[in-house]
Image 1: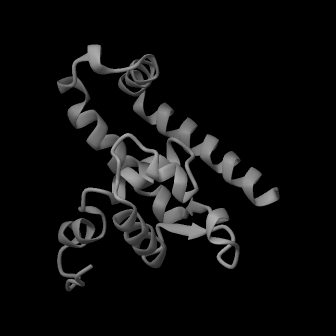
Image 2 (image 1 turned 90 degrees about the vertical axis):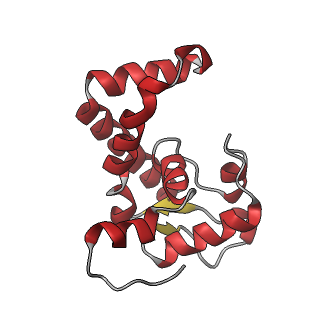
Length: 144
């Protein structure tokens, strides 16, 4: 990814997270507790494997993700959100709130409708719970 001079916070943030895939990968990590390459490939957005590999590498290099066992077998590598990665959760939530009302509920599954109700009722509580749940998930992975 092209490096830009850090003279504007918005331009710098877009350089880091403004591509089509980075925030979706972070969404899958934090909100859906995906951690393995295969799990990301199975996401409904159908990211190409070469792009996924590049984005994961970039997110690790930039400190948004870390590898649980960087020396382990390729099939067993697990990606976890760092504090920097978790700091993107409010951005993900803002994007969600920006567009959720323009999506017909008839195309949402029951889980998505439940999430919509939770987020729109109390976004901060939803974020806190999801972050807490994710940190417990990570703790379990680290202890296994």
